[in-house]
Length: 368
Image 1 (cartoon, rainbow, N blue to C red):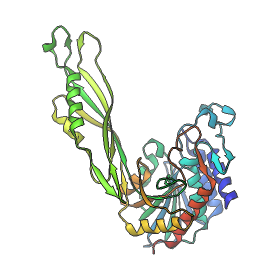
Image 2 (cartoon, rainbow, N blue to C red):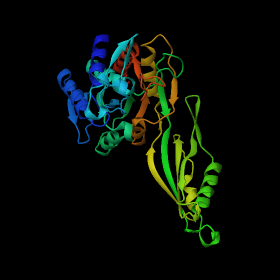
Image 3 (cartoon, rainbow, N blue to C red):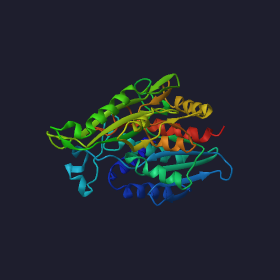
Image 4 (spheres, one colour):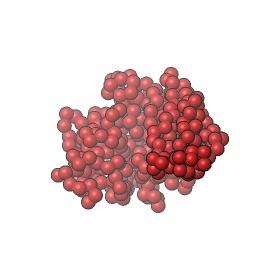
């Protein structure tokens, strides 16, 4: 298995996919057509979806990943080439790990899922899905869901290794979402020597800041952990000159959301002259199917010497979009905290093998 998973991960990582996922998607599609008897499709967005096993009314389990990545660092390119010219990504193996852009997030997990999809004798209908655009708001997942993709349950291969203890691959049953907002304060301009002739937009913006600081941020208990949301003003921009009462001021707000409830930011619109605009809304995720989570945890436990636990993640993934649409999701993958998006991104080969075996076992045990 090691040489197969290393070779497939190497091939996937070497294909540039930070601004155009086409070639990476083609490699995934061609491999599935060559190595499996599955029904393989490529949708208009570029998502690659394959199905095998039982059909009809059988419950559907999906193994889900994405083949886009963030832009590589110069050191992650072959010969330090210019990424704008489509240069191949460098990949290096040392000390039992693979180094390169996408090894952890998440072409290594994708390779593990592809091999498990090929090797499993599924108990129900088994689906493999590799989405585009995860790194830019879940474009591919949203497209697939809008066009009928809807498995009953899914294992999403984002990182869950090293959460409960080092080197242990856990099973995440919840994660936070992210809502990014812009609040626009409007007033009327005047000369600064005639303050009362205008309405100061910056003052109105500070009223919004005070309101936001007083809002109660929700939290929720999942798997013995408390997931706390957060709310913070991150940028502010207003005014045109030292001697002009400003007629416009904008601020940005970063909110980390939790499953089931949100901070009532919309209250800012009760303040005169304020407009609230949602720029990005990545949904949180929580798995409410205890039996499915237990099955994945049992499979993960059987593939490693450490003892995995049900855990939560701090950041959003495509599992949020799937969960929002009705798919029960868990996250189980090889990436460790602090690996994704870094100049020295890497993944353990041993953990890649572990995850592939976990996925195979889940496919053969679910539905029970």
